Length: 290
Image (cartoon, rainbow, N blue to C red; front, side, top):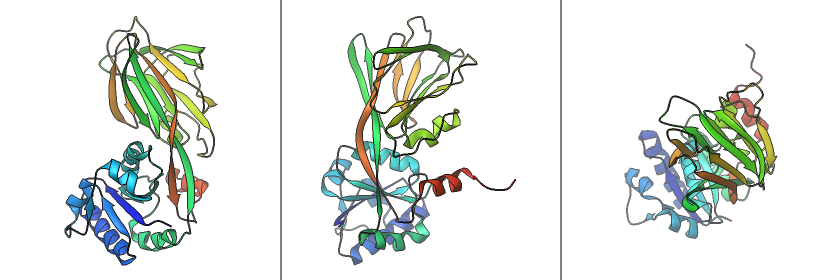
């Protein structure tokens, strides 16, 4: 089923290098074409002409499966880069939690063998896109698999902003910021800020205010096809920031506004034993006696 395999890895250590060496050896034994990003190639001791080194656009257009070696952050970055291509992503976990990168290096050959033989689960996840406007002109664009976050920056006081959904006024708030999360991102920053966990199969978005200056502010779950607009109050002093999956994308000034909507999709590949609730129990330490 999968013939052209891409490799993307985080900048490394000995564990990343060992994992890459094993993967290349395993994939070549199955006579599969291996295409890797520059970071992966630089970490391979045995890097030679047999390895095809490519940028993300070539990986996306030539590969039908991209294996990401690292943590959830590495997979998030890969998803943003490859979302415009119909390519499957599989994560090998060398990070901490591993909500998205769910295969351990110790088991990867066993699971990969099954997956390459067609025994796997495929899961569709959607991204969101954010466009920043200033003086009626589009200033910047970004996308995210987890979340878009607007938050205060170089000021000690709170941020004042207004939120509308599909053109309907929702509220004006004073807070440290706002998290707009996908179901995938509902177990990340949004969860830490008090938001609900949303099953990844649901077409929904969640808005979670960060440290609101009110006792009645609560997270709100909305339809995934909604258009959200966040406007920074003109009376605001100081700068705010927009982050995409934890990466700074844009400094915001009073009067700037951001539109957020559902964007492209990616396909995550899991072993057949994968179960969302088992992952939640394991990663969040549910069900353990105190």
